[in-house]
Image 1 (cartoon, rainbow, N blue to C red):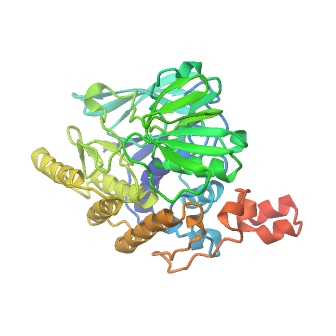
Image 2 (image 1 turned 135 degrees about the horizontal axis):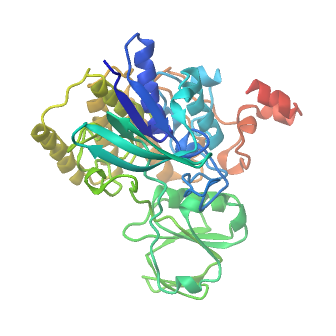
Image 3 (image 1 turned 45 degrees about the horizontal axis):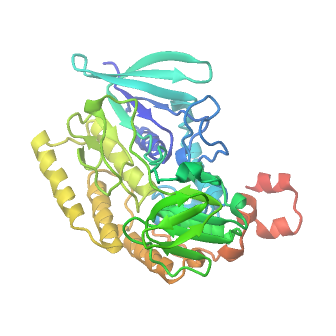
Length: 463
């Protein structure tokens, strides 16, 4: 019989998790389907694949990534560690709990390079349109190879949408903003804190990106940072120089006026106002329509599109857990595709979805959110053979992390945690986070050698 074909859209952490799941089955001697992954960037990693470009990429496609210079993990690495590939295995030594982006990207790549999945990925290839043929029961996918400017199509029995949901900005309008003389941008196009040194910066939003960009700009020399919230403030103990105010109402020139009657002039504005779930390549009847939340409607187990389960979505939830959650989802999806996991009937799936939606509606605190997603991960782990890890202990770490941030937003990254995969206690970083202005992998891993003048070539060879 002809092999099943599986198409994967996106080679970010979710798409790579799906590739790794199939490779794990292959390594166990199982026959796996034919798998093809399409990635519109020139390298894997999705959001973790940093690019200086904003707006459009090399071939004119909208820029995917929102990563920026000086970005460090804003959660403990022990909470996202792959259970089948530890930080110890990759780095051969303990490292701190909050690595910078280049170090985490190196870790992501390490597992994938070890498992030889690059050959499954068509880079510089974007999906233009998807049609589901009811007669053949196949997905017809129209693709553009950007590098050679060629349009073609392929057919698949299953389609995995792993394109992420942090790349299409939600950009609100405020009266008078078009007359603001300084720079106005969305967090998607923020590429580093350097331009805001000695400036008064207004950040609109109360999300994790608002919190992190505000702190990064403060750390790297912004004169002041003001965060404007819609409903609730972030509410941590901010240092002098960072303040929170209610929602912005309008601009007059370079002066912003807020809901509480206060006003202030600014040099620049960054909109940290979230992202849209956007799937322009999918027809209306296949498109996931949701806002960012912990359990999107219409997805059984947060993965299978209920009206057509052969359409699979990965990583579409709001996220506390990340890499290990994507793995758990990918393993379940793989088992379904390989007929090792049978879905219940559509009506039963709907009941299960509603159960999770009802529980989601009752959540009130951040601790509730952590517990909810912890229960969701456990539910997934019970359905596949993804290597087990102590999810309850990860939940404890998430709650400690939340408390650490409340206590001191500037020093929480100096804390250390213990791996639930290896039991290794993280090392304290050689430099306190507020004093560490170099986010390079070489500086992070080999500070002593760098200070002793070891050649750059030698550092790269050792890494």
